[in-house]
Length: 364
Ligand SMILES: Nc1ncnc2c1ncn2[C@@H]1O[C@H](COP(=O)(O)OP(=O)(O)O)[C@@H](O)[C@H]1O
Ligand SMILES: [Mg+2]
Image (cartoon, rainbow, N blue to C red; front, side, top):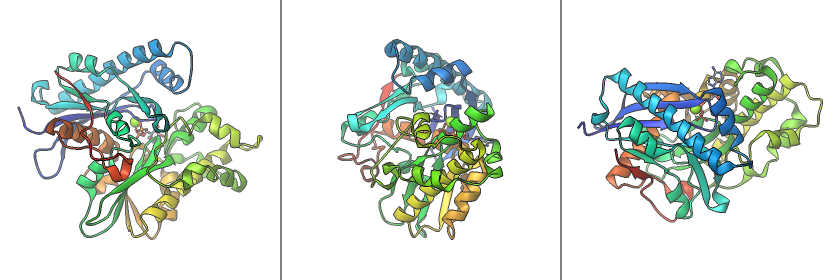
């Protein structure tokens, strides 16, 4: 067995599909050997979206969706193994985040679907899953969990840095030399942009932000959106589709707004809420390292760079990791931590009572 080979699987709130990466952690810096992406079939995407809100026969539907997810996850694992030429037997474990359908830290629970037992059976590889529950059990938010990995790979002894993940939800890790990292969800990443684009363009996202770029934000609407109390709440905090969903947005519209101008407003909301949080919690940072699919939204990146200046905004490939693979690599790393019996959470980030070993292990 190679000592340090792990597969990470991340499927986030965007519901675009799963990102898989094969990471080698045996050296001083992680080496990503191969990756694969598997989009969700439309029917599964619709069902996962529906399962984010209360509905009928949820227990059975959630179980069936979990089983379908395990099939897509196993296919993504087979993809990274094929792309790398590595065998299942050489992989220590799969770190599988699963698909969040509820995130309710206030009520003491979070739910990620994915049937890890079936994934272990299909892949022949040990699976570590359910990373968030233990942190919640210890009084934490169970999120975000990626800051520990961000600190391990992107921190610098010479300067304060921010790692910004632009997934469905946006989260920030503030990495300060010789101090504990902090981190939190700032609010929406792509989720509002995607749902508005789907509604008006019939496409899952606004390609490169081109539609938003053709209109100006609506000032009054922006103000109503920015008044959301979540934005000014102090960390620890985490959020999801439980809050930032279509109902939330529709309730803020006066009616009759131009759809394209709403999209421009949502870009501005996303950029403003992130930049405000960065300024408040990482005022000395002069470098913001961006990852996640939102880095491909050039209009969002343009507005972020303008609002974050004089800090520079740079995609994570400038630091050796493809922006689309950072979160998957983080769950590979968290699986390694679980097998080592090492803590995966940062109590200063999640608010947990202390460091905890995260995850449930499903043997191969
Ligand atoms: N070419 C693109 N133009 C605009 N947005 C994009 C593009 N490619 C990806 N995205 C955005 O990235 C999202 C996926 O990002 P990802 O990091 O996988 O998020 P999550 O972790 O929530 O799944 C898509 O839903 C979309 O909003
Ligand atoms: Mg994704």
